[in-house]
Image (cartoon, rainbow, N blue to C red; front, side, top):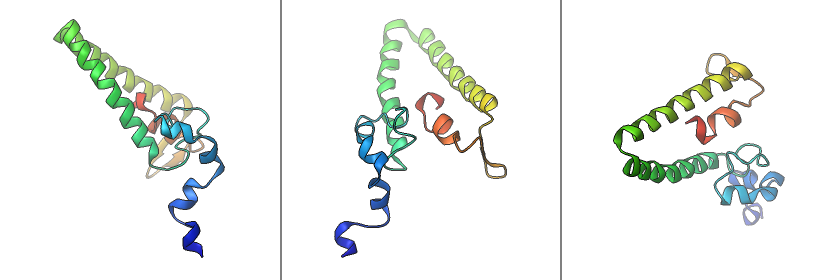
Length: 123
């Protein structure tokens, strides 16, 4: 009887109110940035799929930029985006005191994953 309903394991992670309410954010691959999803929402690994998809959508724009404006401007843009990502990480971790470290543990009320690790602009 327990097998017919799919209890335990992954069934518990998708059979919850957050998943029933915010299923659309997983479908659109915005579950890592949608404010209503509260993190990854339905599946714990889905934040990575969303982040990956967002970056896959960004790369063709960068390739088109390179073809339109030239190599030097494209490299300068890529460098600026990289520096912006590094600065965003630094500011977020210093101002919010959010740390995820094997020695220190999770500092900052466990918001490191949601605010820093899971969002695509920090990568």
